[in-house]
Length: 186
Image 1 (cartoon, helix red, strand yellow):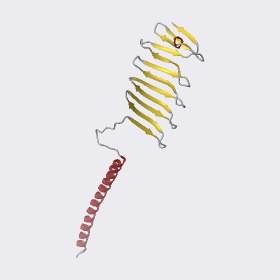
Image 2 (cartoon, rainbow, N blue to C red; image 1 turned 30 degrees about the vertical axis):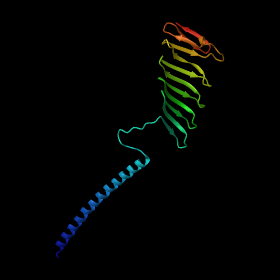
Image 3 (cartoon, rainbow, N blue to C red; image 1 turned 135 degrees about the vertical axis):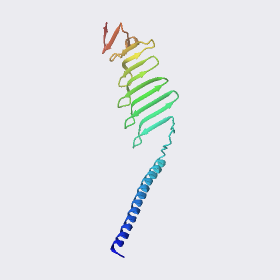
Image 4 (cartoon, rainbow, N blue to C red; image 1 turned 90 degrees about the vertical axis):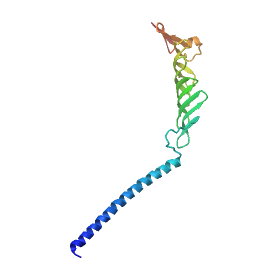
């Protein structure tokens, strides 16, 4: 055997080994990608997630809890009422969005869970209401059944009748109530 023939055989053998090495790398890469995909699919199946298109999850109530098990949000629908509520870490309500019998509103709560403000839209129209620390109506704007906007303010420290609580606002007769002083603006 001559040196050139020996070199040619070695060169052919090296080329064969390199082709096998490239093929083995491709098979290993494909196997790795396939195993990652299958492990991910198994994990998703184990967690109960269904990725099938067109699937719907239905329930009357969804609760979102934090790692301590405290309810932080709630989405519920019962009868003709739908509510989305958010709670702080102690479970005290902070914000709610509600649709109750066709009346829609946003409610804000203080650190004790007492409602302090509300903005809503009813069948008669919109309203914006502020409450006292104990949750009673303090002041706000409401739309009356006649379609007019009424401004009301609870007079400080005094119980008053309904006539003093509401003053109708019209374009020709605007009345503003502010801290026991009523001013007529013409």
